[in-house]
Length: 109
Image (cartoon, rainbow, N blue to C red; front, side, top):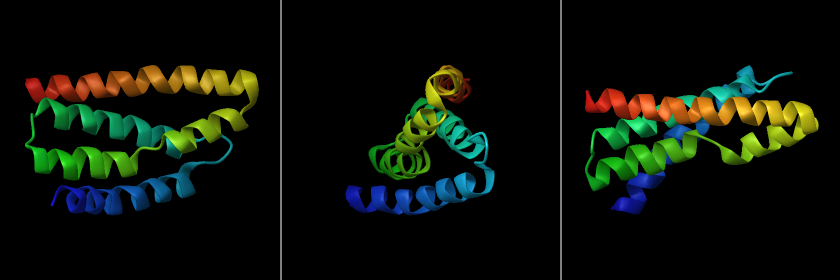
C-alpha cells in the first residue's frame, strides 16, 4: 500500500514541478526556486502535523518528493556559472530551510 501512495503523490507533484519550471524558468530559474521553497514549506507543515504513515507517504515522500527537485536545482546552479550559481544556491538553501521551519511552526501552533 505504501509504495502505491508514494507513486500516487509523485504522479501529482512531478507534473506540477514540470509546469512551474516550464512556465517560470527563464533567465532566472524562478520556477525551480518556487517549487523547492513551496515544497519545503509543505514538508515542514506535514511533518509538524504528525501525519500517519500513509498520509506522510502520500503527501511527504510522494507529493513533496515529486514536486521538489534537487536535480533541477543542481543543473540550474551549475548553468549560472561560479558566481551566479553560488549566489543562487546561497539564496535558495536558507529560504527553503526557513520555509520548512515556518511550515513546521505553523503546524505546531
